[in-house]
Length: 470
Image (cartoon, rainbow, N blue to C red; front, side, top):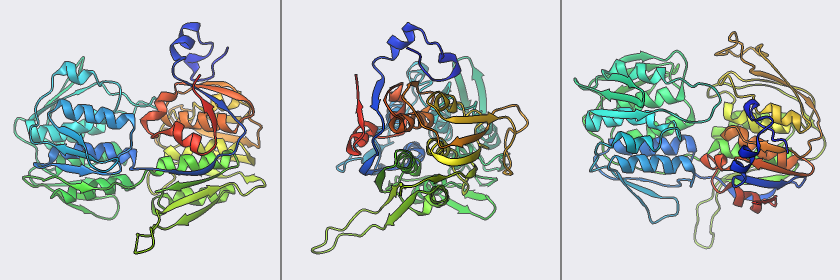
């Protein structure tokens, strides 16, 4: 058996195949996905909201928390630092009590090393609460180095001392943390979160220029404001934070996961199906919806209706479906918000393999995000990747020899294959391809999808997919 996946997995040995046997999903493709599923709070917000609870001097409550691996990692890290995390009365509710924040041992923290990139965001809150912090080596999806230089530079600007050791980073703030003026060379989401979580209790005023303004960033600002922070969002990506001496807990229901919603939309399109995504919100998905319609997909937005006497009300959402006929090729460039989100690119490309003509995709955010196309080509797709910038959007790495543009010729008839998932979003794309292909595929490493997609196997069953664990 040949397993299709990242280059270093081609011609996989029997040992690798045995190691992956318990982490495989058998997918019988060719059946349109039809039905209704629901998305909960955004993965890219929920974990940061959990970290923010460290800053409060009273308990916080977070609703609609998805059951995903990243949440469990952060919950474990909070517990190691003395934060009591309990389940609330409502399904998906978590309660955080930070009254006994304490240091955790290096060995305990290292248990979580490599499983998430969230630990870097503990720096500011731990420096405020304890005066020091330890951050292990960072994991996350292998889609590029995603350096933490922005984070460390910002922390030093606040007055932190950073000592690098073989096991990780040791930080201290011998003179406290102080507001600063800081400009990001690129509107990094993670670095913007770092500045926000550090600046809210730093002495004085912090001005952050070229900040990320994704919906998840704005929702994090809403949480911090609920806690007592003073944060102004100006035009031209400028955020001003006035430090306060203390913060209290929050109660918050996060925005829904727009990445998961778009992933199911792409799955509906690729399989010629019809999927209603409850909880999805139009405002945060406008750019995706425009592209979805340009490709030839149809959607319908249903607004939420609160319950009244004799009327149970309804939850809002968006229904996505393939209307029949041919799909259209498009030219697409990823970008920071309000551009086309890089996490939307991979699932949609699977649908673009079914569009007539040549589609062009220019990935401008992560330099190694097109590696998954090799597996799609093995399944019958016709995708060529290039080092050139096939588009006009400013690119972070256009002259650095990365294959970051793709031309997709379609429509292509996809056939089954054995696949190894390389990262979270590519993993869901492989899953979509297996669902759209003729025949039976075996998708290895599917547990990685649990990092960002809650109960995805149950949702597949609810949508009529024929999948099973061997």
